[in-house]
Length: 620
Image 1: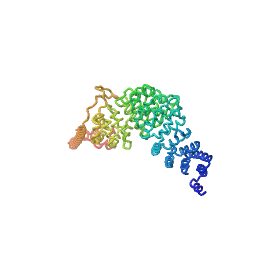
Image 2 (image 1 turned 90 degrees about the vertical axis):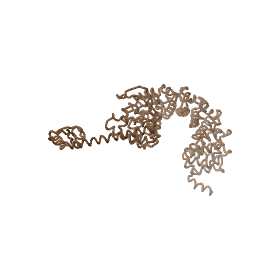
Image 3 (image 1 turned 45 degrees about the vertical axis):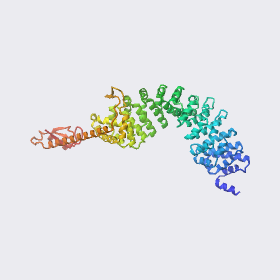
């Protein structure tokens, strides 16, 4: 009796206490059945409260081979509910020694109902828990779970076994290899067939995803096992959305950085099905995964097939129809791959109106990862394309790109913005003037870290800005002032030898040999790739140019001073009416000296430009 009172103090809940007592070893079979069922229900409602009551050891103690299967099902499901999305309870279940007896329940002699419930519970126990993943694998669960994928196993057990295998292999390279080594891949591919229930197809696709992530070896094995055609077939309109989504995720990883699989998937007529999944009638989650597959396909040889299937207008339409960051991110990536070094697709994407949407994605209110992909896509759209350069500048792309060079922007975003700016101003005098006329470019460029400066050099922005600097004589005075500041910044940036050396790779990316075109009324000659830059020579040129400008400024100042001194030393033989004088420093008004004095007495500003008049200079 005293033991029961202590248990009551520990539990603090009469309902929990009653059901814990029911599953005690001394209880009758019917009480155990009722207690296990009730604890399962309570665990599904409040897993923390039930676990804190100390129920887990009691559940594990009853999970013996001699317990009837109907009770075992409720016991393992209770443990599964307690572990679901609860890392603390996952640890408690493992610490209570639940894993070995649960793995034993996966054996071929165990009823199917217990096998399915146990597989589900094990999946919850290992989900996002590396320690439990290793414990369950070490207990021998993987071969048993794989054997339950066979055709002779009931569908619900196949489904739960795939569920457990998916979590066991998620982010665990050792378990990925073990699952593949015991023959799971061929069994999983067989479950993708049309005669398999849809929910099992989706679970099988999910396991394949986790097997191939970061595993080129499994990527090859899954494709060789014939997974690509049935996965493509699951993209069809009559497939449930969740299964379409999982099939698309699997295909996305299978074609990522794998030219052979890209060609096979394209040949299996996947591209029209993927484009169809982008329609507004489909769920956003399905659209996002379809975009990802198209992105990976466009990174390889099927790029023109993606464009020919009508993907471009649909992708651009998604930019205007959604604000979901992951969707925007994916669409921008897809557009980047479609237009990269592809003038035809550059024109198609721009003609669909993508540029203003991409510029809007650069705003400060946009998540950094979306800004990153928008800058990437925009840079590829304007690369060596004067028409798109002009459209991007007209859409006000330059100010937000410059703003992304600031020190508080993530380095990868700074790098993409720098490349986009470099491509935006390359060979385009109008855009160069716009960029250099924006004062903030200088502070942002100067505030970047050495690593970002190296990226700026690698993007070719430093030599291109140097070209702008050397063309400064044709720019208005206000731009000249900014260019003077720019020169000092360039000198600072170029003091890093790595920056200058890295620029060798990118200078002269425009390669229209001997051609000449017109950019918004300004003739621009485009030449073949420039010769590699010698870092010492480049720095020497900068220093010499700075010295020349310094000497020119000193000469102008000296000439101005001498002129002023000559004016002061003039003879006073002429009357006020005979002497001519000009407003200084603007020189707009030339009157007789007396009238100049009268004008100055009334107002100290030039009547023409309204500038401050400091004095009147006598004109001989």
